[in-house]
Amino acid sequence: MSGLGVRTENLSVRFGGVPALDGLDLRLAPDKIHGLLGRNGSGKSTLAAVLAGFRRPDDGRVLIDGMVPFENAVVTSRVCLIRESGDLVDSAPVKHVLGLASGLRPYWNDDLAGELLDKFEVPTKKRVQKLSRGKKSALGVVLGIASRAPLTIFDESYLGMDVPSRNLFYDALLADYTEVPRTIVLSTHLVSEVSALLEEVVILDNGRLVTQSPVDSLRGRGASIVGPAAAVDELTADLAVLAEQRLGGTKSTTVLGDLDGALLAKARSAGLEIGPVGLQELFVHLTGTTHVKESSR
Amino acid sequence: MFDDRSPIYLQIADQIKNDIVTGALAEDEQVMSTNQYAAFYRINPATAAKGFAQLVDEGVLYKKRGIGMFVSPKARELLRTGRRESFFAEVVDPMIREAKAIGVPLTEIVQHLEKDGEQ
Image (cartoon, rainbow over all chains, first blue to last red; front, side):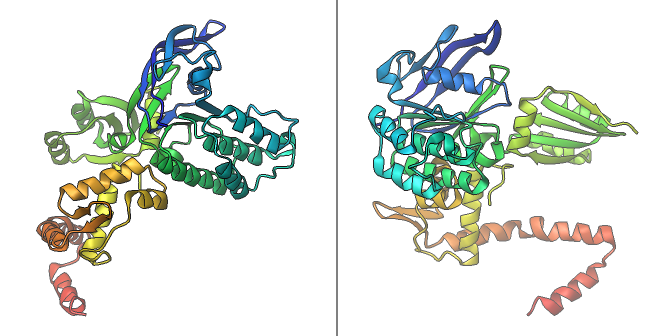
C-alpha cells in the first residue's frame, strides 16, 4: 500500500450562489502529512468533503490518484474523512460502529483500533449517543487512524478532545504514520499546536489558495521591522507588506520574504530593529485583511 | 521545545551540535534514530530526517548502513573551533556594549573574570 496523491483543477463549489471554493488548483503529494489551514469559513471543510467524494464540485474537478472520487467505490473505500460531527450511527453501540468500519475499510487494523480505544478510554459497549463530546471525538480519530486509509483526512475532528487526549492523538498518529506511511490531511486552525507534525501546508482564505509550501520553509519567512516611521517605510517600499502598526512616530511593519544581507545591513545602519515572525502570526497576517492600525494618542 | 520562528530542522541540528560541544553526546556514540527523535519531540519524521541529513552533510554525524547514525570522531573539535571563531563577536562584544550602556567600567569586568573565571 502507498498513499494517494491529490490534484484539484479550477475546483469550485457554491452554496446558493455563494462560492465556498473558488477556482482552487492544488496538488497534495502522496505519503506526506499535509496541514490544511484557514480561518472558519475559509473552505477547509468543503474541500475535505469534495476530496472524500461526499459532494460533487460545481466547476472544475478533483482527482485522487488520477480518479474522480464522487460515486467511485474504488476511491472512496481508500479515502477516510473524519469530521467533528463524527458521521456515526448514534443509536448503535461503539463495537457495531467498529464492525461497520472493518467491513468498509480494506486496510482496517482491528488490533490497532482496540489498542487506541483502550488508550482513549472509550467504552465499547455504550451507544454512540451516550458518549461525551470528547469520547465521541476520540472514537472518530480511532476510526481514522485504524482505517489506515491511503488518504486520511481529519477535519477538525479532534476539537472536542481535551489537551491530554489531543496529545495522545498526535502521538498515535505519528507512530502509526511512521509504521505505515500514507497521505494524511489535518484540517485545523490550531496552527501552533499541530504545525510541528506537518510536512506541507495549504493555506486557504475565502475559498482561494493563499499559499502552499513546505511548512519548515514558512518558519522564519516573515519579519517585523520596527523603528521611526519614515525609515521603516523607506526600507519596506519594495517588500511584500502583510501588516502595519503605528504608535506615534514609531512604526512596525510585518513583511514576507527572505531579507537579503544588504537590506539587513541597511536596516541596522538606520537603527531599525528586525525580528522574526512566528508561524501562527504569519498565518494570521496571510488570512486577515491587511490594514494600518493607528493608535490614538 | 522548538519554536516557530526558524525552520525546525535547523533547530534540531543546533540542538545536537550543542550536545556534542558540551560532551553530552560522545564521539562515536550512536544518536537516536530519526523516527525515535520524531516520536520523542512530536514532530514530523521528514523534518527530523532533514535535520540529521544536514549534520551528515556537515560531517558532524556519520551513517553506518543498517545500524544508524553516530557522532563523527572529529565532530567536537570541528564544532568547538567554529564556535571559538564567533565567540568574541557573538558573546563578548554584546556584553561590552551592554556594559558601556549601563555604565559598568571594563576594569570591573576584568576583575570579575579574574576572580570568578578561575573557579
